[in-house]
Length: 274
Image 1: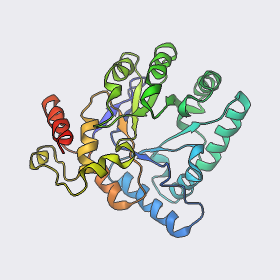
Image 2: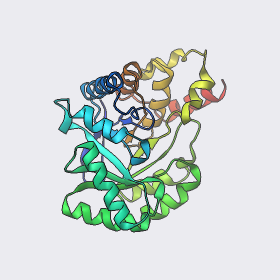
Image 3: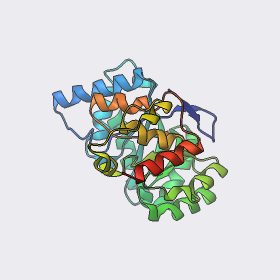
Image 4: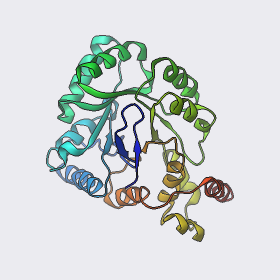
């Protein structure tokens, strides 16, 4: 699995991780829990470590904590979650609940979800990082209209991480958000890599072009992920899935060569021509 540096520390992260929105919100169903356990085990086996969750995602945090605790690799994952409420104490209470649900004493990354009351939470996160309760802190959003605000906060507060939407069809971040992140030593997590499934709907029934094999691309999922990863400003992409087959496919995008600038342009032209 290819790795990228976290600029603020120099620590390396695998390029492909796992999002848990909807896919891990399964409550206490034993069959569903076993399936998620297999997904986490296989992800680690294939070199992935980043697991991204949120209190917004129903039971996802608790499911991650519960199934990871059954694996020898439990303490090898990079655990990321979020604060998603208003008010200082409410934020502290929610984050402490996330620690308990995910069965962590230290959280690798705590993010301010969709910038909710960010000015309040950033003070807590800075203090918690100093205390060693969290290792990194960051910001998230999932729509283009939030990019200018993310840029402004990156410049003023220099978070360790920023998470935002980016895909072969949603490329607003290329205007300046990637550049701003790089200039301020902020690592980048990518959400919405498949544009909420719209990319797959567009290519349904279409074959991946033969020339994509030059980049080790064997599926449309890898086509879309390798396009994202070919942007050097991306630290890690976090597609969500609960299916072992899709997890293996996603992880495959972190292996082999990545498209260069010409390859990226060719990929865009082909996709737009479908």
